[in-house]
Image (cartoon, rainbow, N blue to C red; front, side, top):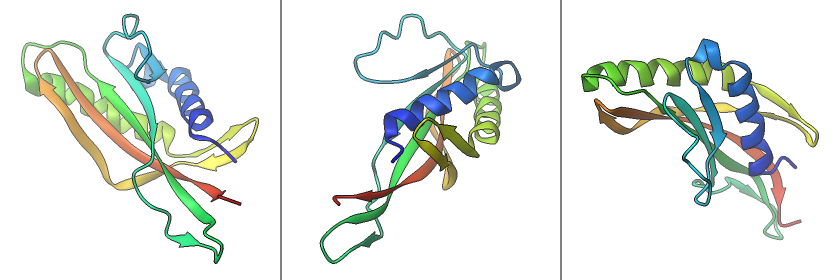
Length: 145
C-alpha cells in the first residue's frame, strides 16, 4: 500500500528533479508543523488529503479503492500586478501537472496520479503572490482488511 506520506514525498522528488523546467526554486511536502521560513516563492507545496469516499466496499465493510487527494500549491513570486502573478502561478501549475500526472515508483510499489475534473483551484490572487492549487489523486487499494 502506498500511504499518502510516501506518495507526497514521491511527488516532491519529481518536482525537484524538474524544478528548472517547471519554474520553481523549491518543492516541499507541506504540513501544519513545518518550518516555512526556507520556503520562498516561486515554489510548489505538496499536500496529501482525503476528501471523497470510496465508491466500493466489501460485505464486511472493507473500503476498496480509497481516493487520496494530492494537492500541489503552486506559488508565484512577487509582481507589480496580480495578473502577472496569476500568469506565473498558472504556468507553474500546468507544468506541475504535466510532470506529476504519471505513474510513480517508490520502495513500496507503484501508483498512478490522475488529474481531477477540476484541475485547478485559485487559492490567492494578488500582486505580491498568487497561489493556484493543482488537483490530482490516486487510489489506495483496500482499507479495513
